[in-house]
Length: 125
Length: 113
Image 1 (cartoon, rainbow over the protein chains, first blue to last red):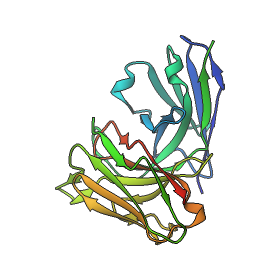
Image 2: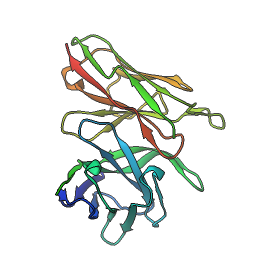
Image 3: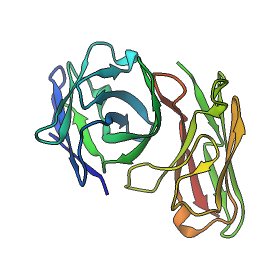
Image 4: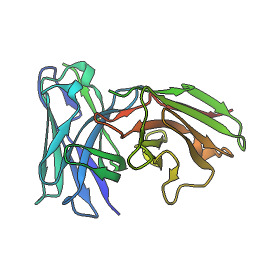
């Protein structure tokens, strides 16, 4: 059974970069799509983007160019980097696999399953 | 972006009674080429990550109790819990995967009355 675990700093200063890793265990990262979602305290879920094990990625346009994802198949993990963070980026960050559904030439249409436990990142000086 | 709106924001139901949550999208989630609605429901228990219950609007994920059911098509969808159990206390969110960016409803908090 595939399991995911997020890791990274719990506190980041404004204007700095946030970096998170998601380690996949119980299965290979290869040939799947992997995604990041965040949830500000007391608010709903926001999709950040997804990346294929090949490195091809798609991001939420609302986040502009601040987001970069990468994948390391040798270490079976994928990563998120968020530049120039502000307090509005304070949230629980979840990683997940894209499950049931399909992908076309330019986009995927899949549910998120399974999810990691999530990690709280606070942006504050 | 597709906007997903759930109602109500919170709901209190007695044990053994029926709970119903609705989700509306501002454009159709039905893809004519495969006649599928690209709508999923997630359950998020306190302190836990979301867990998918239903996808394609009405397909229960294997292992999900049959008291959970999803209905609807196009822009209007419903999640029903036929007989509320204590372990069903959670936030329930709908999710459209019809188009990128993926979007979610704001969540409905379900409590025991």
